[in-house]
Each structure stands twice: as C-alpha cells, then as structure tokens.
Image (cartoon, rainbow, N blue to C red; front, side, top):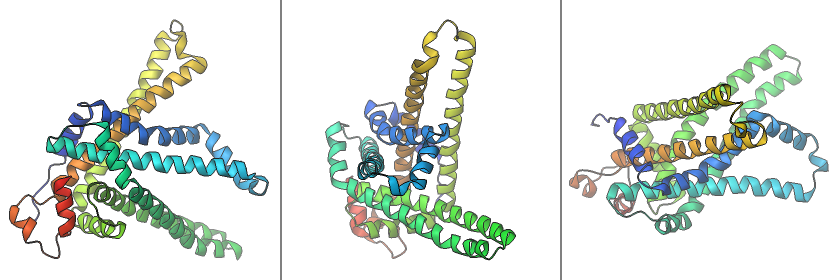
Length: 304
C-alpha cells in the first residue's frame, strides 16, 4: 500500500539545489536555449513561415539547406538530452551528499546521453505515426466530400492524439530518469516507467501541473516586468529599445527558462528517488513482480 507523497518536498529540494550550484543553471541552459529559441521563433511567426516555405518548396531545397536543417534538429536533440542526463546526475549526487563537478556530470552525459536521445526519437516517431494513422478517417471523409464528418473526425483524432501524447510525456519523464541513473536498456526503462506511472498516476499528474503553472507564472512575471520597465523608464533606458532591447529581453527570458528547466528536472529527480528507490531494506532484497524496479535497476539507482 502506497503512502501519501507530499509533492512539495521534491519542489523545495529542487529549488534549493538549483541555487546551490551554478552547474544546474549551466546544464539547464543546454535544454532551455535551443528550446527557447525554437519557441520564440515560432511565436514570432518566423518559424512558421520558414517551415511553410520549406514544405511548399521542398523540391527546390538544396542539399546544403536540408543538411543545415538536419544539423539544427540534431543539435536540439543532443543539447536537450545532454542537459537532462547532467541535471539528473547532479541532483542525484546532490541528494546523496556527493560533490558536484562538471566532470562528473560530463561522464554521465557521455555514458547515457545516447540512450536518452534514442528515447526522444522513438517517442517522437511514435507520436508522428499515431497522428498519421488517426488522420486517415478524416482524410477519407474529406475526399468523399463529407466536410462536417471530416471536421468531427479531425477534432476527435486531435483529442485522442493529445491524450496519447500526454501519457507518452509521463512515460518519457520516468524513462529518461531510469536511463540517466541506471544501466538498463531502453526497453527496460520504458517497462519500468510504465509500472511507476501506473502506481503514482495522481502524484505524477499533480507534479506536472504544478511545474507547468510555475513555468507559466514565471514567464508572465518576466513579461510584465519588461512591459512595466519600458513604460516607466523607456525614454531614459535606451538599451530597452531596438535591437539591443530585443537581445536583452531574449537573454533574460532564456535565463529564466534555464532556471525553470533546471528546477523541473531537479524536482523530477527528487520525486523519482522518493517513489522509485526502495527505502525499506527488506524491499531491496525481496522484491515482488509488481515492484517498480528490476533488481539490477534498483542497485544501479542506489549507487547513482
């Protein structure tokens, strides 16, 4: 029988850890900077127009342009995956009372990053495949001229795809944590992640909602601060206008995003250690088939 888990504990632990060492912010930037630039370009409209141009003129796209796009996408995957592994490793060492260093995090990145990259690519491919399959009924209805039916099927497919994507997000969080902290295969990590999610559905969803609300609140606060500063000091602080102001705003936003990403993964790691590591000595020896960890996974996590 599971004991009630207070999600405030991992949130507080993650917050304290992020401000205890600048390494957390450094590796948080590895996740936030590529993701933040992509998000800002999409919100700004330049990303959508570039993608639309690329999709409409795919036949005229040169090999060099396609290669550059592939390098950018690969860079986002590699940077994000390295940041995840490093942050999880740092937080685990922090909670164990071990010393934190860039070299220790880098060793974990070199050893486990490829597994997290494979996880990200697998789940993305799965979402794309599921979305393509779910869109088939709507496309068939549109071909037959049944616009109302096609629209209804599109909405239903979108809702189902979002639900599946949400479940895959939770599995991705736990699988990434398993892969970062233990020497197990991608298949074993997904199996363990599924068991862990089924045992702690409510706590997982609640933690995700709280972290999402905190992220949105932080971004809104930063945005309001910029607007307030520009309205009050816009005439006297020239660096808040023009290109310099845009760069200054981007740097500040990306800095906040780096802190948030570090806090998120530090909190997830602390929460994961609470629910996945066996606290009772007998449980580490006598594990039933319903337990969350395989024997070798538990040993690896305890040593992480």
